[in-house]
Image (cartoon, rainbow over all chains, first blue to last red):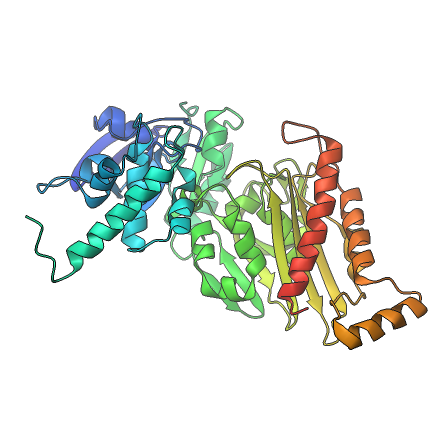
Length: 167
Length: 310
């Protein structure tokens, strides 16, 4: 009785699975769908390594049941790059050295992606507030903030009509 | 950590949810799940059934009508933070939401869930005490309204019956000269409070306090109303009086045997500290927490006064 059919769209692709009531969204993503870019860190709603977008909203997927996400549109780190390469934010993390061990990075990228979608030009304070639920034990956050700023600047530049330097 | 076995139900209407609560054994209501799911993982809660009200339409609105702010069962902390009416007229609610957990948790966590959970470490209960909120519980026999003073009974214990759902919180609209503030001391972002204090004040046109509400977070086995502190403030004129007029007022005060604003605030803050019953834990000793209650109460009173136009 405690089994349920769940259909989720992950990075644009629909998946259906029969799952236990108690299956967490992060386990659906990692174990059932084999998308291991989403990490499990603390498993206690603190660290944010498991952050994914649920209908565009950054969410700690260790604290959501898979059945709660039935019908939702989920975004994970695997969906950020496209045929043209990395997203502006991913490029920012590379250019600004926004990671060392990389464990928190998928969560940081998803939170950062949602922030930039809602606020194209966030201040440093707004960036720090937005990522306050994502813990990084390597960088001290300075380069993560710079990475988000890099992406904001790049996206603003890409939108400018006079910009013709991109390939 | 894997939660224990349970069955999951996602009713599409309030009627269906109430029927499920009536027929299922050992059922627990879930809204955002940001407190319940961590408790399940730690086996602090092991319900046989979870009734997820998250898909019920019509429960996610914040409106100001009939002299009250009405917060529906599914209003998230993020929605509260982004609401213009709340920011303008209920800054104490914004203060409270902003210090709960972190923005990712607040994207799913609900105000009604925070209150219905009955955890004295949660932040909204103290604010609801200060605001003298009303809890609207919907059960098989319809709606009933519970005053906040009759709602909290102890650790995770509220007046809600097992078959009832907290469907709305009603907060009386603030008077013309009123203001409030919520202050929380926390060791790090997202932690429970070492101490938290909510203060809501209403003043008359001369600046006299006509009504004071003070609630305390994580300083006892239930959220605490600091009644003696409220009494100490009520009837006092606490406005900072500057210049010649202020000097005259102060001299008059001395001759009439009155206390000055600083003394009244200090007495109220001490009364709030005396109302606490904290336990020593990794967040501090009993003495430390009591003292922080005193310090935060004084600061919250001053901030509430300044927001009231004092």
